[in-house]
Length: 114
Length: 111
Image (cartoon, each protein chain N blue to C red):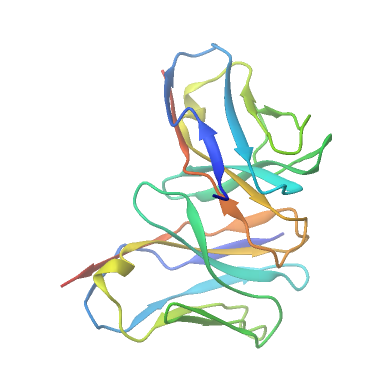
């Protein structure tokens, strides 16, 4: 089954404790992206990657890091989480960086930073 | 810059009512426009899309027309069902890499 998986689905942590949210897709997609969803703000793009070793900032990259060492994986790293990073995070992938192509979203990771 | 503005929600309709969710956009070129739907506890799913002016996207009874003159992409459905209850997001992609989403409109359909 074609899918985007994220782990963990739920995470409660404390300020300053480094964490990684993993994202993996099994569709051989070149393009992957991370979003955060906040009430009243919709989805905002954090980072995206057009292929292995190619990443770029979205609208709200501050406080986040990403890496793309393999095509299937695109982890989101919070080196020193803060309470304002409490949010619902979605990973997405697409066949290629083409504006008409369909994005496939993962199920989401709900992060709470105390 | 690029941005998307959606009508405020939540929207509550009776089954078989007509649905319109307004979406307008600001873009520096000719973006593709999308409607995504998010069911409770799930990620977003593409509902429909339009890639150029006057294109009409349609799926599952939903329609939206890309209106360049009014910079709009309003979502419509002639007869909603309880199963259409979800949050709907309008979005645009200009470069193909960056996506801009609206704030979402929550729809509840009551029997």
